[in-house]
Image 1 (cartoon, helix red, strand yellow):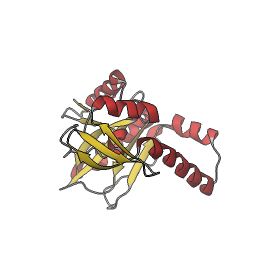
Image 2 (tube, rainbow, N blue to C red):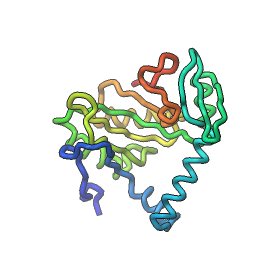
Image 3 (tube, one colour):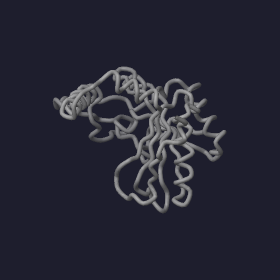
Image 4 (cartoon, one colour):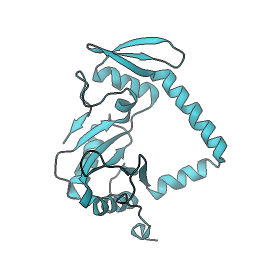
Length: 201
């Protein structure tokens, strides 16, 4: 079957907080072969994994000048320097190295562009990128967000290779790349010490 024959979900008439995902066939098949859990077992597994993860990195509860103040699930307060090096160490320790190129797309173009991204992911055109997602709710005025993922934001060559593939698809405007660990640590655009995006190209 040609990947382009797949039915592609589009977000144009859906206005809520959810995302629509596309994942390469190879990745989906691997996951299906590795685990055959029922819904309750899956939910339990996700909860256990998230607890272990947040026990390690904690949750952001505020900022103090050039530091972030975090608190773990067991209530233990931690102060760590808010630097890229420190964030990278946390990412390594927790194996949270996934990141994404973020595309901000006008509402009138979202259906065509999401279809283009979907086909590229299914065809394996993005190399290491095996998934992408699109928000089903508008961000600001008439703008949707598409995220194109890479497995390791510390692998700069790979990150930039995916960026080049996006450029080949016509995305020549400046794009921003944000690691998921930044989101977990509460690092957003108004943070005065660490930029909300790691790379810009």
